[in-house]
Length: 199
Image (cartoon, rainbow, N blue to C red; front, top):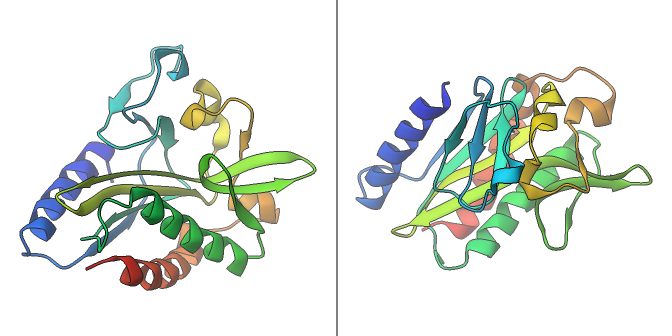
């Protein structure tokens, strides 16, 4: 789904959840190739070749979305809407469990949001997270690199981190993996995790 169409859908669902007209909702999808920049993105982190970037009202910096990446937008009324860091940690925990189910040892890294693989080859980000909470309801979310072409990340400073690489489940598993393999596992762990932090 086109990023801007998905953003409009998020906004509509967000308004409906805030108004009590829709239950908490999780959107899972893939986008065509696009760069999006959160509020903290700096000019030097943007593509140098003039590639268009969509500015968005989420936390974090610039990232890429595209085919082979499973993007999730949890639009949920939070029990503790002021505890944004706790909500991010909840998402990280669910994504770490997803990776573990596939045999990938993913972790959190202090002072860095998202989900990482870390070993003798260094730190590699496998999932990015950028959230916004308005009127007690979350929007935006996470992007899990399942099997994307990671070369698009080479045009930017992803998430403002210039001393680590990005990776994917396919690279870590050394095999092809389809979004359809990962989606039910994501649903399982996210629905479980979101049930603990949503009203």
